[in-house]
Length: 331
Image 1 (cartoon, rainbow, N blue to C red):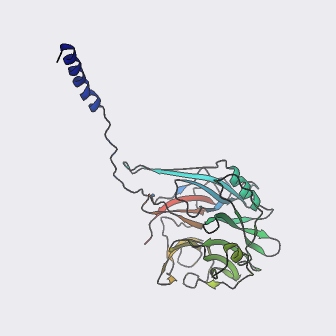
Image 2 (cartoon, helix red, strand yellow):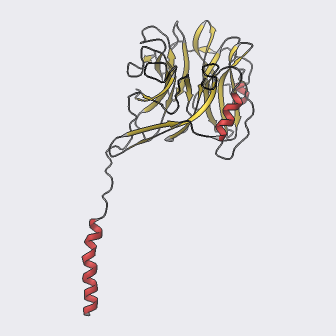
């Protein structure tokens, strides 16, 4: 080997340790799955001094960025409720176990169009968005106040917004559920073949169920003549039971039943052996001496527990009803 080549070889050897010594160690993963904290966190970016509640989360969406729709009377300064929208996003550190949650009233041209189609001079409550894999359409339902008989469930369908900015047709009545009383807070099972809602047609508010007959499309079913729904007897009490939301084999809802911690408390039930279990109060970590209302249960497969979004008029908020987020583990 010539002297010049030897010198070059020795120079290369001398810098190899420098580069290998600067190589970053891979981040240590202490948590394979994230954990939603069980503390109750106010969605500060969405709450106002007015009432903000009745949030939905899009069924089937598994994402750390959640466009959300909810009811608020901010535009009327405490008067009628309209649907509005915002954004929630979160992150989890797999090394440190730290959880970050943010929320804001983010601009969204399509959700502006969608919520405007529902808003009337009356109140709009309980939005619910879902995707129908059989026809490739997305839907949104809500309860809208009518002059004839209080709250009716209405809905519309549209091409998924990620394809373009689709037109939104005005909502039509989901006549299947509607009566001369208040009918609201629709929830649908995973296959869209079972529906739950609440109504005061029997006096107090109770939770009811209907099952889709074979051969009917979703739209045909929703617009069928009014049917006689079945009471969910294992859940209903002699007090108001409202706002059912079903995720898989779990139902979460709000109730004034005796034995609670305040006005409306939040409960869950599990579907086992062909029936819903007796309601279980979610406890003092979630419920308060005030009212907790319209819970929705979310899932992210990168986390080991569920998250729950609900509204409450508890002390310490911005005023009226505020929106809150917490983690929850269910049996």
